[in-house]
Image 1 (cartoon, one colour):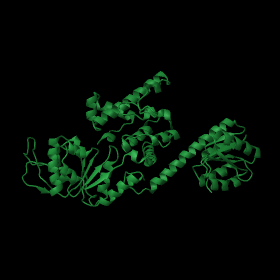
Image 2 (image 1 turned 120 degrees about the horizontal axis):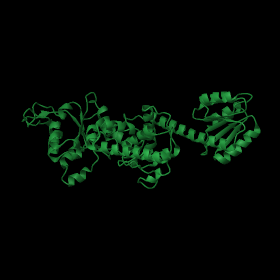
Image 3 (image 1 turned 60 degrees about the vertical axis):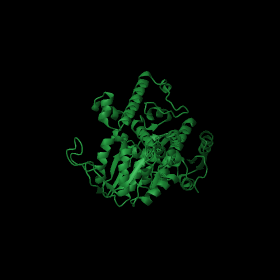
Image 4 (image 1 turned 135 degrees about the horizontal axis):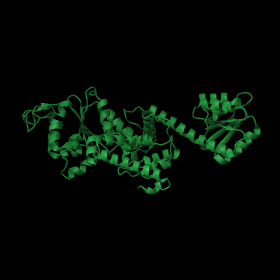
Length: 477
């Protein structure tokens, strides 16, 4: 039977009854845990299998089964159990061997009670983290979701179920949701799950192109159609022939082009600039927006008939505030991804940091969460991220840290306790990271334009980006 208690469970193994009694009383009082005892390694094994302890504290020299053999059996049974080995004089070499074989630490008898209390508390925390990671990993492996999606909440499942049902059709799909909710992932899934997936998908970033350029890019033009049209150009709709075209942030398309887009959806044909004839196209149209199209219709900024043509099927991607149960899975997924990617698998999050990240309001949704976890992995100074580290690791676009207390603003008093040189270095680092983050956001990840705007050479800006752990691809839209 597994441990059903909410309290952590510690198993103490020793052939000295007085030691068992002393440790049981001390650990129950000081660590707030339940304690069970065993007089030998042989007696300990069934207790381990039946009670699932968080920590095992074992003597190394016992008559029937020594601590090294018990440690080996524990590791085979459950590698998340933290083991502390107690050793007497003359068995230090055996204790070192135990560390090599996976023990958390060893204590040399006689020891201070405060010392073992501190070690057991550390072990309880370690086991909790390991078991949380194992649980989340198992959940991730059980998820059968399209590439890039992580979660099991009903709103996300409903959106993905709708995607799977309409993916292999020619129905026009409108994907709606706040910034950072995964609209582009949804569009990719619609294409990958369709019979058009073997052909290259075409993506149009609507707000990035001026009106005159957008029209010629979408529909193409003939030689001589306008000044500078030196040869025929095949538009993006023809590029997407037999495939899918994503009109990203379609709310920003000018009304004049909306009229021509409506014709594409109604008649399945385009008319390149400078041509009198139309060309039939076989293109599946997917559009996305984070704006209120109904409000834009009322303001005369978006055609109502186009809206109804786009709105054949609407997929709404939920924000993190609607799917809080998915946040632990997302944190685990991104943390595992980036620690492996950047060879930092020794970095761990303190339990209160993990709890804070799970409860934090992520205004930028999954994108903000992803980038924040990446920043934590890249910039963590030590192997363990504590709460006091977060004011440097989590920053907004103004170079200011997003407080993990009640005050949402930045408080420079966080730095006052540090030595002057350290405080200065930390502030410069925080400013640089926030400044570059804001700069690349403004220029949508274009390093050349960003460098020109801020007065730095491109190479100098790239050096700063590397130092701050910032990747331009994260800012491309």
